[in-house]
Image 1 (cartoon, helix red, strand yellow):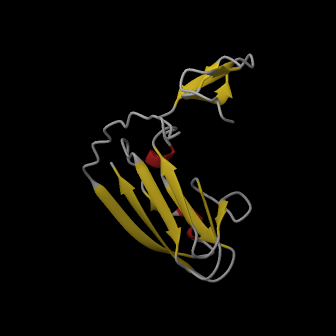
Image 2 (cartoon, helix red, strand yellow):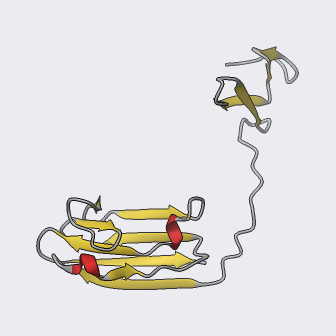
Length: 138
């Protein structure tokens, strides 16, 4: 939608604002954008200092073995299935019926916003074996 000028308004929003979402009452929340229409953000310092990596061959009985150990303060985690069969990822005792399915070649990225990156993860296959790896930053 074109506003016509930098100071023009439409439905209470200026030309340099865009409606991203509303609050719980349905009231719009305008967010500033640049003159090129890009969302203005303020990056926060992540202070990543440590990279941890690991690899495991997932089996039909490996759901009781920690694949990714818990690590308080981990800010990001990527888990990749390099195998030729799907794996299930979850908490201790994960089964193929309870875990998050990660297809061959797929990866799962977790951030620190909800604490999921700091948790321990376990992996299991329905059949055969699959090599899985992870990289975590803290």
